[in-house]
Image (cartoon, rainbow over all chains, first blue to last red; front, top):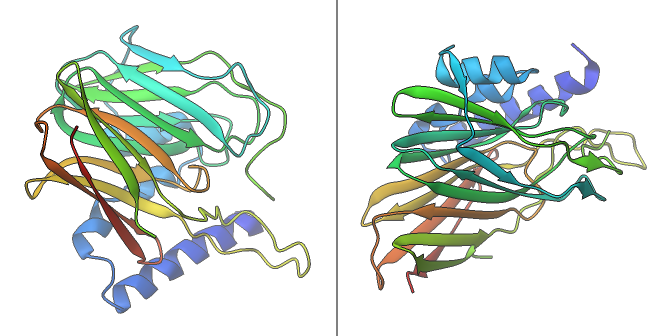
Length: 154
Length: 102
């Protein structure tokens, strides 16, 4: 394990324990945050940690709205539209980031959802979305986003 | 330092937009003077509640940008309903905000 990774993990764990000790984080909230998935280094591992290794189906129903060139990797606006039914969870990943999983969006059986946020990208990469809907796991990859200044620090 | 949020009915779905104030430290950066790593400090969970049931939740990692912006669509709430948003970060700090569906 690289030193900076160790520091990163140690800091997050220490922070979490401090939160529990002072009673600030409800235990239920902690149990729900998928720590294992956020710690993985490949998109496959992250998807397996989230969705238990179900077979992933490529689909056109997931569409992305992303910039072609992100001048500043610290703030890259992204939008994802998911045209599926009974969506339970949408996971957003950047394969080239040190930890590919950016965030997951959890909902109760929604259809045709759109989510948008602003993300950090270390270098040029496409986006990968993995969606659990109707008991199946779907995936799609966006076109490449060219990053000229990385936004992961270090 | 409340969460700024808006909720708008559009084609039968409620579109929620939220803006939070948070440093979102990844834990990978170093203090340029001392070389000490800056500890990770980022939001882990944003929850949207409607009539005391959870409508939407976002698990955030450190790769979400500083001062996170989040938009999402949900079906269920009607015009005039109030939605509550709240976040918790990895150090246990929380914040919240409210929006009435327009």
